[in-house]
Each structure stands twice: as C-alpha cells, then as structure tokens.
Length: 536
Image 1 (cartoon, rainbow, N blue to C red):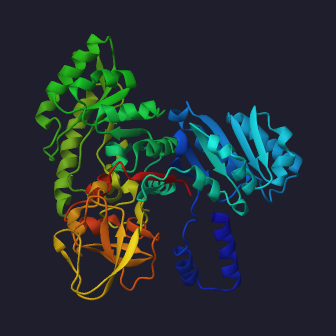
Image 2: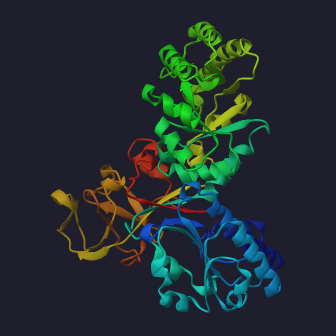
C-alpha cells in the first residue's frame, strides 16, 4: 500500500540511503495481488475479491465498487467479511459503523468471520446473516455451497486466509487469463489530464470491447473518473454499455442505418461523415418525432477515410439549417500521423483545414459546438491543438508510440505451465516437426494458442514469453489451444505463471516482431480468455 511504501521511505531516509538508491528500490516494488479483483464464480455468481486487508475505509470503497455494478442488480448482494483489525475504535463503535455501511449498501446476506464480528452480530440488521469464529468453521459449514446467483464481495484481513474462500467460489474455466489493472487505467487517464487545460473535455475510446480489455468494466471505471464522453464503433456496443448502467455520453463512430432506433432509444450520439448518412438520420429522427438529436460532424482533412471535405461544408451547413431534427454537438477530424515528426508539416496543414471547416460551421449556429482533433499522441505533441476536447485511445491503455514511460500497461496476458518434459537432441516439437531440438532441452506446454489470440507467426523461436522473469522462446508451430516453450536453464515447475505480454513484456515487442501495431495484438485476445479486473 502507499502507507507501507511511505513507512519504507521514512526508514530509508533515516538510514541515509541516497535518493538514487531509494528510487531504484521503490521502482522494484510489485503491487500486492487480491485487491478488488472481479472474477466469474460458480453457480452463476460474480466475485469481487479483496481478501488482502480489511479496514473501515477500504470496506466502504469495496462496497461502493460493488454498488456500481448496475447490470448485476438481479443478483442479490452478499458480503463475506472478517474481523477488522487494528482500527483504533472500540468494538462497539467500530461495528456500529460497519453495520451502518452494510445497511446503506443494500447487502442482502452477511457472512462474518472472526471472534470480534461474531460478538457484535446483533448490530447487523440483515435478514440473512451467519457468523463463524474461523475461516475453517465457515468452509466446513456447507453454507458456501448454497451461494447461487449472487454478487459476492470477499473482504478479509490477510490472517484469515480468505483466499481459500475465493478458491472455493471461483469458476475455473481456462487457465489463461487477461489481467486488467483498472488503477493503471485511471493513472494513465490522469497522466493525460495533467496536460490539459481545466476546461478541456475528454472522450475515451472503448470500441472493440475497449481494445480487448472489456468495455463494461473499463467504462464503469472511466465513468467513475468523470470523463465527458465514451466512444464505440457501432450502436450494439453502445447499447451494451447502456444496459450495464453506463450513463456517460456515448459517441457511435460508425453508425449503421439499421441501428437508428437503437441510437434514439439508448441516447447514443452518431458520427456523421456523409450527406447520405446525414439525410438518413434526419429522416429517421423526423419519422420518430425527434428534435435536436445530437450528432458529431466528421471533417476529412487528409486521412481520406471518412468525413466531409472542406468544399462540402457550405452545403452541409445549409442542410443542417433547413431542419430541426438533429443538431451538431461537435465537429472533429483525425490526425494522420501525430506520433511522428515526419508528418508534422502535414499535421499543420490538417489543422488549417480543420480550422476553416470548424469556423464556418460554428458561425452558422448560436450554440457552442465542441471541436476536437487530438488523439493520445496529439495530446502530448500538440498541446496547442487541444481545442475543446481530446480523444484518448491506445495511450489510455498504457501503450504509447512516443515511448512515454509515464504510462502504465493496463493489460497482462498470463497463462500457466501444464507440463514439462525433457526432450533429447534430434527430436522435434509440434506439428510438421517444425520445432527441431539441437541439444537436450526442457520443453514446457502452456494452455494458450491461436484460438486465444496468440499469433501463429510468433512460433518457431521468433518470439518469447516470460517464465519467472526469464525469456522462454516458442518452439515449433503454435497450436490452436496449446503451444510449447523452451524452458531450458529456467528455474520453473508445472503450475508456474507465464507472461505472454504485459507489465514485464511490453506488447510492442510482439507487434514489432509481427510488423503490425499493438492495437491488433491486444484486440485479438479471444473472448474465451477470462478477464480478471482489479483495482490496486
């Protein structure tokens, strides 16, 4: 925790360690596991696992985290809570406060573990409540097997070993997981916020399931962080967010004509990039008796993908002024290469074109029209072009072509070692005998393959993963569900963790090998790979 780190810092200063040495040591600190992890549980349950500590403040945070899951309203809320240790309060006062917190958050079932909470059981005004002196007593009671279709918060101090409870409740489907660090997401957002004027708004890209990390959890976190807009690719993505309780403004970047009713019903604001699309939306809005529905005007300033050309703007303004069904909420464009100095001259030309178009449109309307052009890289390299809003995409997820080390990776793809075998020289590994062994080697099989999103072109020693911090190269062809890695000389055993990309193995290393972009790597992680969310 931050408090523990500050204690360490104070001791280091007392011991007169140099600032350089302190900085070096602090950088090596790893976050503790089990901090607000969201996992799928058995028997239709969703688990929120915070079994590292239990204090009054973190209990409130965890209960708020549970309360924000609007799509889980149909599941009753269950709290498994240990004694709160070293609070500084008397037991009477402490558990009076705990009971009030629990009541205010609509907890339907309470399972208390520990001598203290058991002795104060009468303070909890809940119809269904159980108390046990020890974790072992609870696990043997059989109550855990009757937890069904519930949203379960597991909140315990470390001495109680609540990881055993989580182990019993967790659904184990696939040993390959994508860890999504929601705190890193917030930290990256705040990094970009620090570059902006106070009045500059932010739209965060959550299309393609938030680049593979899971749009609902990511959007909840961004909504809690009070971003101004979210952006999705198609209306179905926006509808999914609305059904999950997301109320933040949502832009749909590629609206389809068959989705107009969804746009209107779910308050999803479409990007409009052509006269045909504009006319169709106006007609649909008029047919539904809708007035002043917000739209976002895309200007083509050089990408030549979608958008109105500069010469189209006078006619665009004329058509907008002749109707009342829709109203321009924003006007925007897209930099071609804001991350590279090679394109700086063209970037300036794009800005000039955009300013001309935006000024013409704004002059035609009395209300303020939001202007935005900067993506993540543009926000850093061209702060003078912030306009009224910036769009954060890949940088939000900790991937930056500018090599900005202030960002934190949000996603870590991990798996485990299934089996290790000794393979003699002259043998081969995998299909078509592609993996040729030239010396006696240790070969490990791991449960991840191209069906999980691991690109086949990474095989045959073209790339590596990390096993206990050591490089382990892929051997032979990558299979659909499994692949093999060379763990010769690496101290490891079956069951050990393997990092495919993430905190210690940046995703750009894989994208560079494949001669592609990080977007492709992270967005290709299969839906069968379980996402595990945590907040440090």
